[in-house]
Length: 254
Image (cartoon, rainbow, N blue to C red; front, top):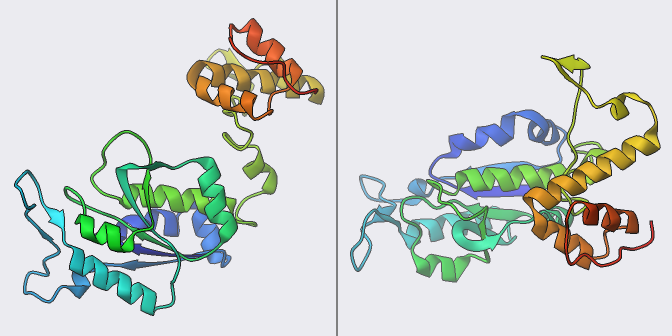
């Protein structure tokens, strides 16, 4: 899968290019990335890519023309895929959307804004989708772009073990259960006995209940979605009711 990233700070992307799972997946040829700097299209002495906003206000706005010329160069290089940018007013990035992008495996272009934002005329003319990581503001689109690349690459076949990808938070509609490793006792805190028992059925029950309890406590909206989607078993519903969950319908048969 190919990513072309339009950014003023290509060095930021060394994190996903050269580290961890995404680096190993890249070396196996599962994905590639090219970074394009809009300053390279600027023709003036100072390589200007931003200017003051019309109507006044603080900060600077990225100009449409350098970005448009950069996208034209990306298109000429062979990437005809969708163009995404990042802003708090975009659609919230979800696990489902990440999986859609990974499944499509088509080339994708990521435009990383900076300063106060991007000239709206460029967004209207070139960008297919605006994405948000949440209700907060970052200094630019580079970190969201890194997050999207990391999330998508993890879903590509061969990037990680299939079981790991299918058992992560959100893959089942719920948050993941807590994890433990050696030593069995750390600073006076032991690993739960059930995880040392070797009894896989009991371990599975414990993990499911911990997952349900954590999701109910911190993301009750996911419980409602899982319930309406038929992802909860009767045992899940019974357990959630003991935890004080309300308006949970009878689950599917376990």
